[in-house]
Image (cartoon, rainbow, N blue to C red; front, side, top):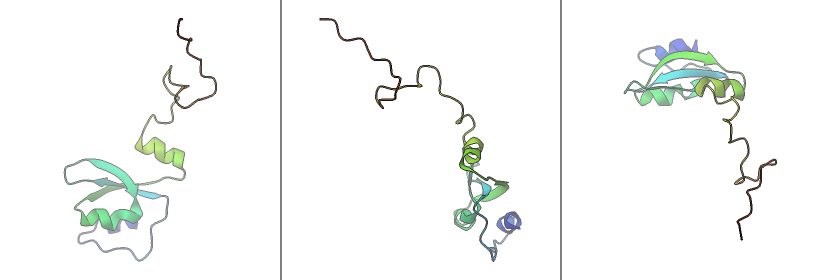
Length: 98
């Protein structure tokens, strides 16, 4: 229902608010695509974007995996700990030689 409304020409907003877990794939006029809330459809359509698909995402980990594949993977070797953030387990640097 919400996808067909967003793809209609001219756009006629639906009478109900899309659910919070409904996301559309928007396409910018230059061809780039991104994923954002279906509730923002009216704004993006006014800016000249189009809607090319929809996804239902039920939690933040699923959303992160959808928009940034690989972001849930463990960090690369050597960056698990950081002295800058005082992460526990940081190996202390050798003291400077006298």
